[in-house]
Length: 150
Image 1 (cartoon, rainbow, N blue to C red):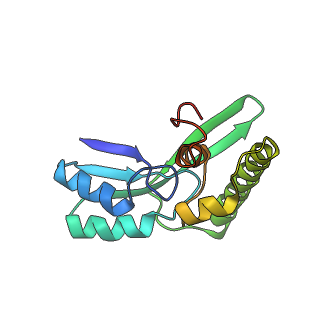
Image 2 (spheres, rainbow, N blue to C red):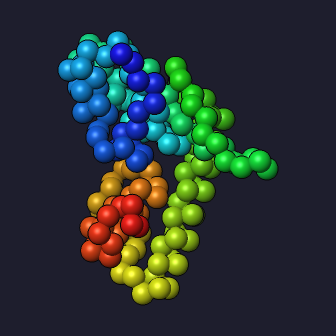
Image 3 (cartoon, rainbow, N blue to C red):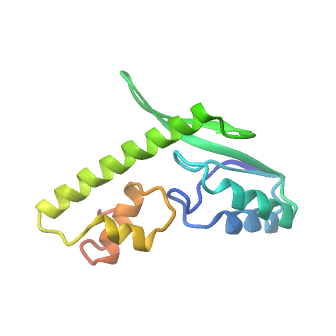
């Protein structure tokens, strides 16, 4: 068994890179790839955990691509190191995501909801915040009952 598309708490996953690698070892996976949305932040921790748990680890990323035909997600696997041009792309993607998040939060605030970016920074530190985090925050604050409802 292998899994080449796994998200961690560095983006919208539920488990840390170490927890993912440990679970892969326990389930005797032959290989696992961490492919967080628009970030490589979980890769160093996953590499260390893979050594500790003797798991074949593949560093990766899932990049959001917008074209005139729509949006799609591109998986990059086997990333050896980040070039300056790759880091520029990642930084731009994160900035675009952050701008979108701020717009969504401003719209919720305009509707009278008690929510701000500082809430996310406290609850989800060192994470690329995305729509799933916003849904989770709405549940935490009792604004909705479930993430699906959000």
